[in-house]
Amino acid sequence: MTEDKKAKNKKILGIKGLNDVLPEDAPVWELLENTAEAVLKSYGYQRIRTPIVEETALFARGLGAVTDIVEKEMYSFEDALNGDRLTLRPESTAGVVRAVVEHSLTYNGPKRLWYSGPMFRHERPQRGRYRQFHQIGAEALGFGGPDIDAELIMLCQRLWDDLGLQGVRLEINSIGNAEERNRHRADLIAWFEQNRDVLDADAQRRLYANPLRILDTKNPAMQEMVNAAPKLLDYLDRDSLAHFEGLKKILEYNRIPFTINPRLVRGMDYYNRTVFEWIGGKAGAMATLCGGGRYDPLFEMFGGRPTPSCGFALGVERLIELLKEQGGAGVAQYTDVFIAHQGEDAMLQAFALAEALRGTGLDVILHCAPAASGSSFKAQMKRADESGATFAILLGEDELKGGKASVKALRAPETENNQRLVPMEQVADYLIGQIIGAEDEHPCGCSGLCSGPSSHGIH
Ligand code: ATP
Ligand code: MG
Image 1 (tube, rainbow, N blue to C red):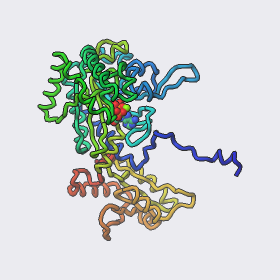
Image 2 (cartoon, helix red, strand yellow):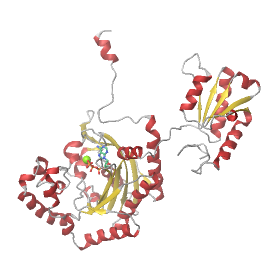
Image 3 (cartoon, rainbow, N blue to C red):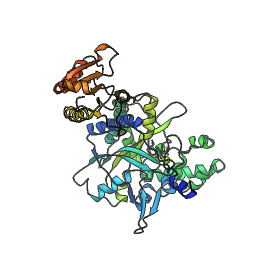
Image 4 (spheres, rainbow, N blue to C red):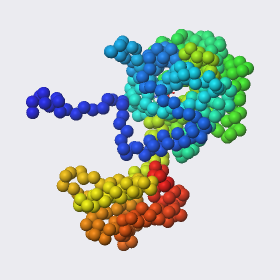
């Protein structure tokens, strides 16, 4: 092969930090996405879909210039066709608020919204940290009280419960309003100046621009100094304190356990008052699964009317990893019935049968030839097994002669009764009868077809 041709045939690989989600992980992704959608719906949140690309200025203005994201994590580029400065969204709150202001969605009153989709941050790829990752988030817009903060937190708790996740814990804090933060900030800067020798390069740089973020440092050498720093909670005025107390009261009344972490701040400038994080994972590998808080000033920063708001975003990849660790996913089944066939007549009838069964709500995979020569029943049955189907249907010469189909129960223990001939026009009724018969025996209360959450119509 010439060098030229070799270069041409070289495999092109995916980009570092941008992952493929392979079919084996599809069930656990679906479990999370479907459960989240159902929970959000049950609280009255409506879905909004905003573009993946926005003007760079949106994030620079909304997130604040001295934030990890804007300083070093954004994928920004110039549109070569018209010179526009654009950015792949690193998060969704800014885009959602932009859309809500643009379309006056809160004109008639508050709105509960949610979104789901990919986000992009140029970070060093490692476990739980990718350059394309996914978030599901909720934004409650036009609500000023602590009740909505509590609702969002309780919605998350319900999601963990519905997913069967164990050991996810809640940390909350209040970071007050701009004036309270300013008073605290002066004392905080003084404290950091007194401890200048302990500050790392990042902290030195942020000392005057964003000292609050220094509290968020992960540098072990700074922990002791940071722990002893003036606490923002001690600077809150009456209204902010009352808001925080109001939130705590609702959580306590509803038995949602939490700890107050006075050092908890959020990465973005637009947060105020309530901030919270859900943390989970094995000891030693704890990760923030979900972060949220109140962002009352953001609407005005985007030219909107004052609209107090609160929201959260959860990291889908980190939750998927936890779900897999805790074994709450393993559903290999992706169909109910697999139809195997041999011969042209059988192939034609198999098509008709598959359509009829799908019409009753069953999920059906019809064997299609991997090569023009066709494949043996044995090879087809191997595929049937791998599909996790509950039933296989075999159509061959013998079956067709009697106008029948062989129906084989694949998940039942091996006995002689596993396979029987059923007249073609009765196959659908027979399968449904089997399913309903199995219903009583199924502990999950489903129709007996499934080995876990499934999308088939009968379930
Ligand atoms: P961190 O301090 O870990 O960088 P963050 O404050 O940047 O987190 P948020 O912007 O609050 O994170 O995003 C909310 C959630 O999205 C995080 O709690 C996390 O679960 C997830 N997340 C954030 N960045 C990434 C990433 N690069 N890869 C995977 N998940 C991420
Ligand atoms: Mg980050």
